[in-house]
Length: 415
Image 1: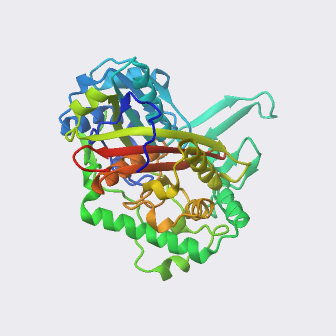
Image 2: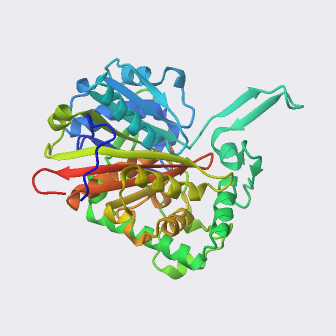
Image 3: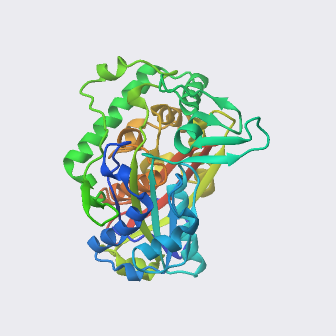
């Protein structure tokens, strides 16, 4: 395996110091009724406690979300107060790239030496998302009312492109996927085959118990502190027994069918960034080293978001001199099956070898924590196969692609 210098040589991710909730779909669990930020903050010490890490070890907190929540103005300092330790910190948001961006920025904090253990807390709730009222002197109504989730998914203010039709289940995002599928002349048969394969990967990972390593059953409390339920499953995952089921689905837009697109959901995910000595101290397997090797972002032409991740990956590979053949683990945030087929074409890579334990297209898409879960799944999978270079990538609103390469190394004999 080629030796590449880390992007942040002093910063590490302690193996196993992570975890999160399952991702129940929109309005399918009691998470729909609670303050998701407070739920995430109060879950963090429970998750770390299961890893035998006291919450008192943290000296900084970066949170990431995309859907407005109560008291968002106070962001990380408020959330750390909620779990009992008053920490400095900040909030970060970049649509569906949020989870990976928070990880990169947390590692940068450690690299500067300003903090030695940074908490990474990402979350979002698409159920019961707020509507905002904005003064707008440029319109005849002088006021704009926006439903944060549905209106932003249905309209791109940079381009004026829209495609929102609730009756048909269409949004500008779906139109974006269809448009890009036409550009690359995708065959629906291949897209359907990929979709079916992704579901089988998820079913197998769940059956094997792999997901139980990183997903925890978390109790949900109401305002009085009374239990109202527990999140124990990725509710809303579809069941497909045969490829024929997938191929028979109606295309909402070119190569976009129900099986090949994600669904709105709720959830949270957390992990830590730390100095080398602290990472070893906090990890149940201190012989495992995890570092960021490279990160990249790319913005493609308007209305072609699904192709952007592939170009971001090319940038990350160019930075390092690595080739796809050097990468042992590949995972992505894929709101559409179209994304993965296009990536496969751009990088000349077999899509069968990606997302070995599941992906957001199958288990859901709460935005803020989505790429955090993807990253943790990929790193956990990498450890099970002995380490190596791990590629994470995804897309975000604004036709943006984001990518990162991590190196997982086991000093007791792994790669």
